[in-house]
Image (cartoon, rainbow, N blue to C red; front, side, top):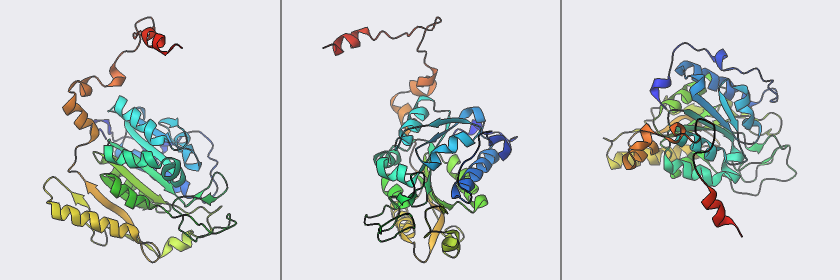
Length: 317
């Protein structure tokens, strides 16, 4: 994100909105929201240069609870809206948030293509294994054979691993956090926001209402920090191909751990690839100086400056 938009005089309270929060008591969403407020404040991001895009589901309410620009989008399309805003206004700090169902089911195609484009923005996935807003149906991250208290039968569909999928899709910063560890989660969000490229943060969170399998107690003795374990995630332009492959393979292996150990931290921090906007500027030098948000669309009287009547004539039947 743009470093010139960082300031130093805000606290997490400045990012609280006056909207009533109706998330369930004990939901991991509360921890994610607090961590996001904390990270935004610690970086000092200007509120009028920051936009939070939400999808559908409990997590989709996040923009209402933050004192920034907020956009509530369509089911599975949060990354499309966020990408459009970032391309139109490259100086905007763009953060997309959505659930595992929203992002990996109907939004799966957008998840994949967002990684390979490498736009300079952050996508935070609220991952609780169920569709919490619609009463606990299995989401794509619930394992085969698992059955929560809201399900009449065990899950018979294969599951998707968000971190592994992000690695294969080309995200250049990939992390995983835990909703109940707010300080560590805020640090991950801060690192992701400062990454010059497409960042993805998978946030594991209990759903005390519908997911009675992956509870706070279940996670308690499984989580460990990659960085405290000596893991190295950085890939630079000077990293040779063999070393880069080793980091990728190690990240993929760590992402698969689940039953006994679950890794949190930074899996990949790749600064060897230019972001999408940099490549656009190389192709079209005027893009940086005159992005879409700086181009006039109306004249002084508010009338559209583009005559679309020829197009309308072509569409007549």
